[in-house]
Image (tube, rainbow, N blue to C red; front, side, top):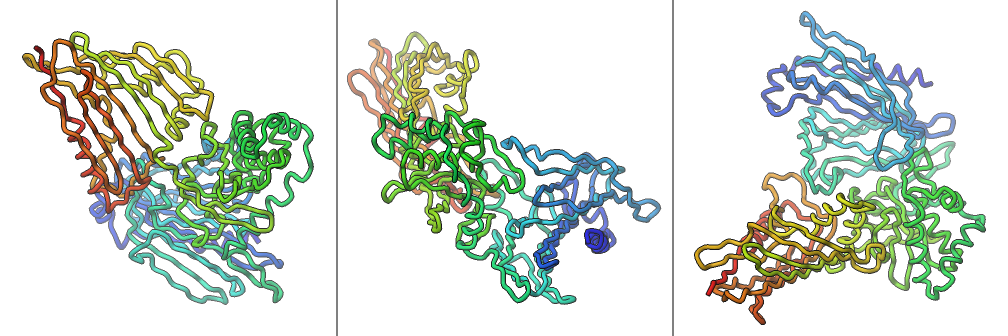
Amino acid sequence: MKKIYWVFFVVLFTFTSLAQNSLEDYKKKYPDFNELILKDQQAYDFSIENDKLKVIENSQYESLIMTDNGIINNKESFSYSELVKLMGYDAYSVVTENGKEKKIKVTQTNEVQSGQSSVFYDDVKVRQLIFPNLEAGAKKVYHYQTEIIDPFLLHKYVFGSNLPIKNAVLEIKTDKNINIGYKIFNDPTNSIEFSKTEKKGKWIYQWTLKEVKPVKFESNSPGFLHLVPHINVYIKDYTINNKKVEVLGDIDKLYTYYKGFTKNINQKEDANLKAITLKLIENLTTDEEKIKSIFYWVKDNIKYIAFENGYEGFIPREASLICERKFGDCKDMASIITTMAKYANVKDVFLSWIGTREIPYSYNEMPTPAVDNHMIAVYKKGDNYIFLDATDKETLYGIPTSFIQGKEALIGEGENYKIVTVPVVAAETNEVNEQVKLSIEKDKLVGSGKVQFKGYSRSNITLRMGDATNKTRFEMIKSLVLKGNNKFNLKEYSEENLTDRDKPYQINYNFDLQNYIVKADKEIYINLFLEKPFEKLTIEKDRFAPFEFENLTFINSHYELEIPKNCTLKYLPKNFSLDNDYVKANFNYKNENNKIILDIQLQQKKLLIAKSDFELWNKTIKELKNNYSETLILLEK
């Protein structure tokens, strides 16, 4: 049967001829690119064989090298795994000799692990292809066939690349007793052409997008799937021997599928883990104290390492094994937390599925496994939910990990489920609170300060610093408290609450700053904005993607400058306030008790800045920068 499919697949593939367009025409049309994708196609064949659903995927790719610089990109690759089995492939270069096209087969290939940096073990294999004899005008061609073992886990098709694409095609062939559903994303102008035809007793669905513009990869982008046109196809049901088999199409079916992976885990009590749990909670009285202690214990004692190996990518491991190994993935963290909660007699702690912010779908619009890529535990406290994601070691109890803010969680409560939206953590929770005292000694500023980091501001910093010591730690601390200019000299520092997650992380420091004060005759010019938040966050007008922040922040700073005895205040900048959809700011100056005081409150309001609001955002940044440049003037007596 594999041979029959492979012969069909090879016959299916045809060259994209250059006859219609010459190389020079393409170079004129795409002057900024060294390579053009002529054809990118995925074709699925859904059929019933031996009373089972069979899913075959045929992928075809063809690109044109347009310049000599394009020769450098002589590699391509494709992936497969235990759940997406490789059945065969072919690859070759196409060059022109004496006016005729000649195929030169790819002989250099390697099979390697996928190499995802966050994954300890991954069964996904990557087949690397090295194309020979490339030159301007040559083509890279490859095609491969896979069998998708689980019909619940179909791939999405993305109409996009970092290169322009002449023709992007998704084709689905189905037996007539198979019903499919699909959802198109990021095609507001309905540019994707759709057709449904009948051929040889099969339905043929085809989606085509021509002249696909290249995707520009930009920093702070919300993610590829938020931007690029793509399709998610799923199987609704199929009929075998007059019996309909339901697959996907609503949340009930999705939860039934997920529940099959979790219903049999942690049925046997583990004496060792139970003893650890009871010891951990022996002096605690409330359920919240107990679950918080369990949550932090898992963070501190179970190392997060991701696994992806067939269905192990979906099935949580036994809590006893996780405890024994001292490591696990997101599902394992959720598994051990819920099990320890049961041993501690804390009720309403559930396994939950969730998609990170990289995934743009809700459960209602895409009730398939494509909506999720993560798993956590959730504690229901009265009418509220506490999201317990132990994969981030430093995130505080009561605060979800930043990458699931605003996302829906599918909470499994036995036979039933509930969908709850994870809140976006308020800016005030992530406050950076700093107090700085300044004085003038000769021609330099001398200061002492303390800064506290709360919420995500705390966890982001402590996670990044890790166990850094000595010189490395000194440089990290310096970068956190840096003031004024590169002449900032950190003299000494101390830290507080580094290991106590429930308290703000605090740095106490002393410094001096040269070449910052400006003197002209008897006038001394000083800018009290030794830090200028968001100053460099002007967004390019031609940016393609919305601009996304990891979290909301609130800057709360207090500066005090002691007026030297031989000086008087000549000019004090005016106060400033701003409040719009994205930023709230208040800058207040005071002259009090022979000190100049500047209080700064700057609150960021939204995680995502849409393209339509770039102009307002940039105008806001310009206003902030204008006020950052305000300078007070002291006059020597």
